Each structure stands twice: as structure tokens, then as C-alpha cells.
Length: 532
Image 1 (cartoon, one colour):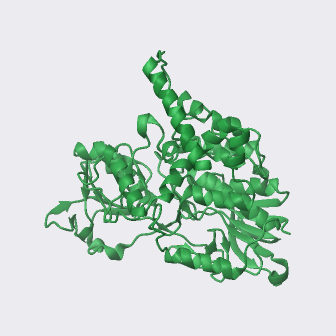
Image 2: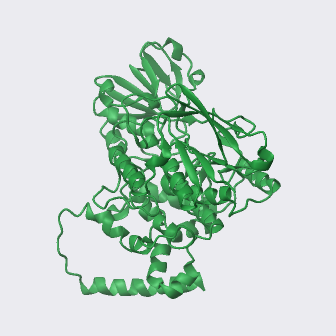
Image 3: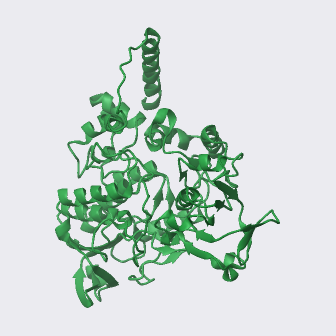
């Protein structure tokens, strides 16, 4: 059984891993190469090697009720979508509340993690670290890697003919911090992910002209969904997820496209994805349509050629003068402290069972936490991964035989369509609720809706039809939180506490009361059909 656990990285997944180890009676030691916790969410004016980098204006894409740790809600006075500075404050509150700081060694770089000579028997690892130019070595029973996948910028300059002749400035979006550099410049942003779109919108407030170049397009949605509700609290429900996964993929994608286009007709704005059968990551941006329609941002296709002071786009012969090019072309990831025989990265993914465990190790004592892109928040995903992984490391839960794990990994690599539900187009993408529920099942912590319907029907209905908030993951099983039920039942109160700065009393009409009664009866019929 593992006792001493080394954790690499003190970001959102690293903090969760420390806490999960402590809950299971293990002894975690977390190594963080920078001088503070927070990982991605800690803004610095300069890019730090080996650590994710963000720009000053970054705001969360998942709302506070959907992106908190499952037993530690955000303060109720926090905005629904959280600026990075407040997100970092929350992480520090979490670390202080659960007394995690004493388990973290700051300014300590992990140089190597290698199997001990008796690994086939002990499953132990030798971890070599560097602190203030002093190297140390220690033996650990298990290792949890929580370094994320946003540290190695992908900069495919070979795909842009003429870039070496360009006399202006170009850089990867990882280097971007403030929009001042764009003042009165003609700017080209390549890549229409969340970072590229954010940077293009920010630049448009200061630049002379901004172009946003995209090859495949994308689905742009607002954080503000129907009736002003946070998008993920409406989209991410167990009921909707079940409905999506029971319908043929073409119908699901058509319904989703129709819904998204109700807010913004993507074809009219040059944004519509070329491949609409597979789901690309949503682009969350509230301002982009307004910047396009007012002529502040111009959508363009891929780049044909880069010249000294201009670029040419495909499907046009016109040259556009450009001063600055920002490559928002994504990231690759690697584990430089691990040998390829332990974890090998190929085609943007690693051979990991359930995105966590290398399948070929003789002893399952190494776990990768947070190497996944769920259609949902990373915090509860990484936390749930850690809860299961720690119990595997401890020996409470067992993994299937290597042949079974390898077969599943290979099937995921092939990415064959199931013809039902959403079809994910990229490596590491996963259905959030389905994946979380699978891990919760392994630790006997998945909400039991049928028995809940008999004992606490109000809660059961809220869990099934309401937002799939992380508190649901603490209703039962190991790590059960007594405050989970109350947190679920009051999540909408916290959502609107910060937006209802002015309250107007409204008297309900008889017709409205009749509609509510009719809706309630229809709901009962739906529940009867679903559960019986």
C-alpha cells in the first residue's frame, strides 16, 4: 500500500490531490517550481518556464457554481464568472481551509521521476528535485503528476510561408499579457480558440485594425444563456446529458447548431465550423459579435502567404498590411521528468487508462491528474480523478488487467463514432457528466437517483433536472460532505445574489400560477416515464 506520495505541481489539480491524499491517510509532498500556488490562475507579468501563462484580463469560462471544489463553494459575493485574481484568492482560501500549505515545497523543480530498482515488487519511485541549486533525492511509494497541458506552446511556423521574411513582430499567445502593445497597430490573430478570440477582442479596443484568422471556424457562445442564466448551469444537467446521449449524433448536432445560431447566425459572421458533425471546444466570448458587426474585428480564412509587411489570405488576392501577428495555435504537452517508457506522448495524447493511469506499469503507483479536456470545468474533473486515483494508489480500488486497459485506450485512440450523443473531434476531449459519473461509480460516490427519489424527492429532482454542480459528487460515498445537499438546494440563490443589486416586487398573475401547476404535473409524468 502506498504511504508517501509525491505530487508534482500546486495548481488546481495538485491542491485537490494533496487534500485527497490527506483524506485517505497518506503522506503527500507537493513540489512546486514557482514561489506560490495557483498554477494557471496565478498571473505574472513575465512568462515563467514550465508554468502555464495567462493574460491580465482572463476570466473563467465556467461559472462559480460549476467550477468549485465539490466541498468548498466560492464565496457568495464572488461574481458568477471569476477574474483570475479572485480565482487565485479562492485557491488560497481552499489551501488554508484544509491546511494544505505545509505539504508544499515551493521553488522546487522536479528533475526526474524514475522507477526504483525493485519497482516490480515495491512500486516505488525515486524523485530527484532541485531547490536553490541544491539537488536532492527521495523515495516515494507513489507519484501524482499535476502539471497540466498548457506549458509548451505549439508554434507551427513551417505552415506559414514567408514568415521568416516578416519585418513586424510575431509571438505565441502564451507571451501575451496586456493589450497596450496593439495601440494603433494592424493586428492579425491566428487561431479562433478562447485565447485567440479574447486577444482579438481586446486588441480591437486599441488597434487600428484586427483580423482573426480561422481555418476550421468554431461555435461561439456567450457566458450569458437563456434568460440571463450562466451557460453551463443550463447546458450541463443530467437530464439534458441523458437526452443528448440517447439521440442520434446528426440530430444532436443539428439541435445544438440551431440553438447556438439563435443567438448568433455563425454563417453570416464567417464563424461556422467546417466540420459540424464533431464537437469542437466552445469559444466563450460575449463581445466578439459586437466587435465584428461594428467593424472592429474582421474574420478571415487561413493564411496563404506572409510577406515583409503584409499577409495574403486564402481565397483572396488582396494583401493586408500587418504590424503584429499573434499565434494562438495551442499547446503540446510533455513530461520531461519522466522517461518515455513510463508515459509516452503521441499525437497529442498519452496512453492512459481513464486519462489517468499508464496501463503497462507492473504496479499502478503513478497517476496523471488533469490531462483531459472535459466539456465542463477542470476543477471538479481533476478533483474527482484524484479521489479515485488516491484510492487506487492506496490499494482500496483495483485496476482491471493491463490487456483490458490497453484495449480501452486503443479504442479511444481510434475515436470511432458511436452514432449517438455528441461526437468529440480532438484527443483528450470527453463528455463531462458521463466521465465524472464513471469515476464516482468506482468509489461508490455516484448519486443514487432512484433511491433518492423515494427518500428525498425534492433533492432527486434538483439533481436530475438542475445543474450538475460539483456538490452532487459529495452526496454519498467516501468523502461525503454534510453540506452538499444544502449547497445544491441554494446554488441558484448564490448565483443571483451578486446580480440582484436592485429588487423589484412582482405580483404573480393567476395565469402564471396555472402554468406553474400544469408544468409541475407534466414534470411528474416525465419523472414517472424516466424512472419507471
